[in-house]
Length: 413
Image (cartoon, rainbow, N blue to C red; front, top):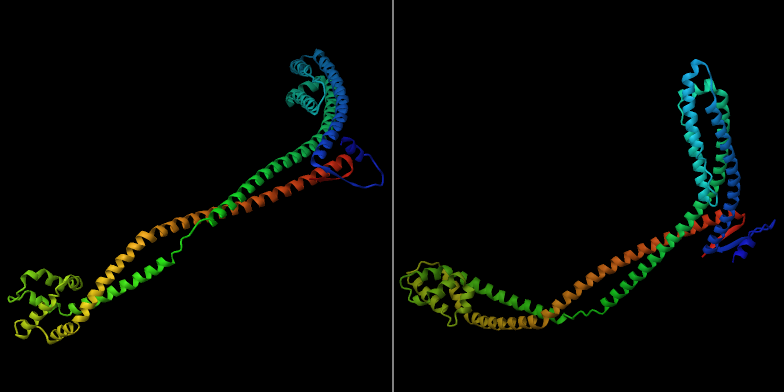
């Protein structure tokens, strides 16, 4: 594979081609090419290192000469003290001249920083101290400054060798790392997508398998129950309307001294207060006797009552057979209602409860399905965005490889 990669980058004038490389091939080529560039850079830096080392030797000699320089003028005494301190410290600093072996980019970078640190330390002198030294020892200081500037230029040349190489290395490493991270993310997304889809399928399958009981017959029973309740209400309304219209007569009869049915006073009171319940409980139809006696007292003048009330009693008597028939029907309706309610409670309420439970679970499943479907769409969107970022990173890598080789490169899957 390496031979194929090498051969494709051999110069072929007037021929422009696009070479397709997998990501793995591109990274291997980049590492191989980088190694070649590092080797070339190392050779240049070793040359610069030798030059800088020699210059530091020269600089040490210059500082030694500065340390030994003397002047007899009395007015130079303080300047000499400043000079001696500076020269002694400078000699200590230049004794730390870096001499590490250059075998890698890291070695080159360390050498560059060590040199710049030494130069920075040598420059740590105040303007006042510089004036003192320069005034009496200007010749020596000029030589030191010139040699220091030469070392600075040589250090900058090392940095000029390193920086382009490091920029390319950082940019390519960053692009390859980004792609690897995005690919890991896509794999995680796909695993979650598969899991979410499996959950959706399973939930829908379970939902389809849930049985809902047919409650149409229950609805028919409930409608029948409503009709029976309506009939009972109509009967109750009829009784309450008829007997409420003669309640005043019954009350006067209740408290008249000739009232002979003392043992039936409770029933009579119920007719006055709750005529419907009293009529249902009055198996012997004693109400007829109550009304007969009350009307007799009214017609004899013992009870003061209006004629219309007497007429209402006559209407009740005329319809009494209908009322008794309605009472019998009411008893039958009550029995039928109770039978229907027993059937509903025994046979249908369990089915209703079952349907409620099933519908509740279906709603819960619908909620989970909706949540999973939303997550699925979001994951697909994130996956698409990552795939686009990978495509962009591959384009950047192709451009950088072209910069390395001068050949058009296309990164394929």
